[in-house]
Length: 298
Image (cartoon, rainbow, N blue to C red; front, side, top):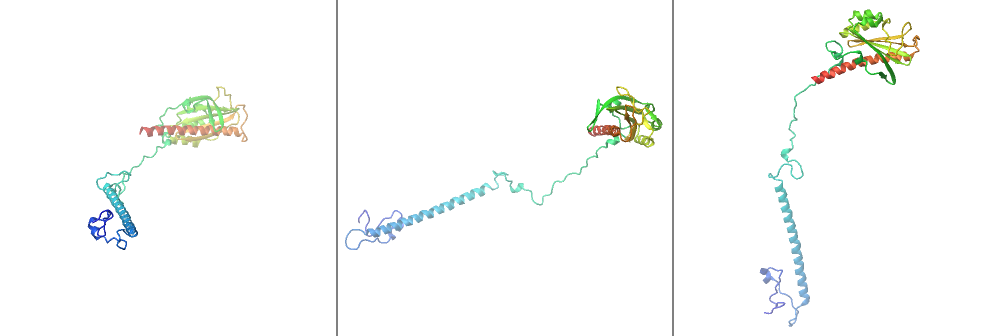
């Protein structure tokens, strides 16, 4: 037996299992009786073996990839099993955390908010209208601004003898309906002066009755002094009458120059209307303040 390249009866291939060595086909040799191998045939055989090795490598790699993928899949399934905590790394809820479609919405006991307190209730009767009251409180400050018009505040007066601060038919109206207080103030703008009088009654019904009984001759006495000269004494002036809650309010407006008021004197009409509006707002604010305080107190 010869060694080296192997003999005609045997050739060892390191890439072929030992059990298959004996099954290898006889290697071709050059014809003739010489010892030189057939190099061309050997080269072809070597190329065939290399090709088989490449196929083995490719097949082995594919099998390894499949094995890794299977291992990853098993790991993922295991991680999502019953041993994981709710929420997981992604923050998504588990099936147990998701409400089913059949779950009913939570029910709440019906509630009803109490109705808001009506401010007018607090200024419609002496019993509920208990906030402090007086001319200084009702007519605060040193001036009054209505829109773009500014009126300068003049003298104040406050009396419980209502008839003494009224003229012509108004004293009887006030007395007959139980007036308990009459507060007055005068505001001026240029040579126009307006006296506002607010009469206080015990009930809304009395104030309404006083308003209904007043006529064109029922006027509050003009209030002068404190820089305001006499007005509406013997001259034609413009007066208004109204009521809200247990209050009736009256205005008389004219010129401090003694001139009669005509329908063309729009500044006098505007001043009287502004002061009447101011009286209404003050009465309404009084009711709102007391309603708000009562709501807070519960």
